[in-house]
Image (cartoon, rainbow, N blue to C red; front, side, top):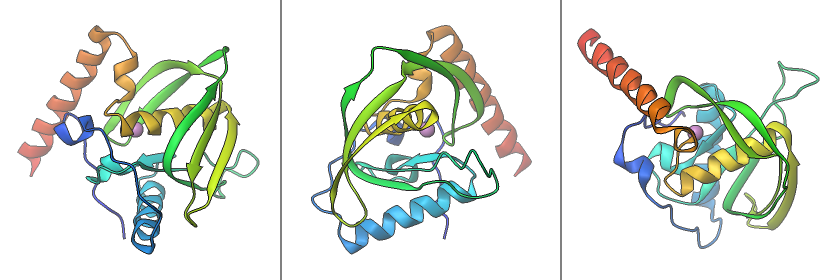
Length: 175
Ligand code: NI
């Protein structure tokens, strides 16, 4: 069952998410619902605040480069913490399920090491590069009330928010 995704601007996207005590069956269930929601959207990452749960949970699957029709590796992370970032950076054109149809180039560290608790309540670390590194950083930002537009100029951020508000008015009128 897909959960409802909150779109910006919404104060719930600005909250600081709380850590998870342990990955219980309920938390694992939420992780799987989030993954289903991400795949259905479709998207490559989703953070719990985007579905109205102010908890430190993210799910990420950046896909399978060799076979784009197949899912890639799904990561379900509670309490993710970035332990190391590379000095080298890269740009990706980022989007977000909470900012539909809006994209901007964002510069971030090209490689990261992240520590997290997986769906079986086991502590793990992952060193990632490329799109996976970008996506993990983007999702962790959501846990701190940040969106990708917070990394670009105020001028461009305001343009994106104006477009979103205009789209919302059009949707409201259409309904
Ligand atoms: Ni996002």
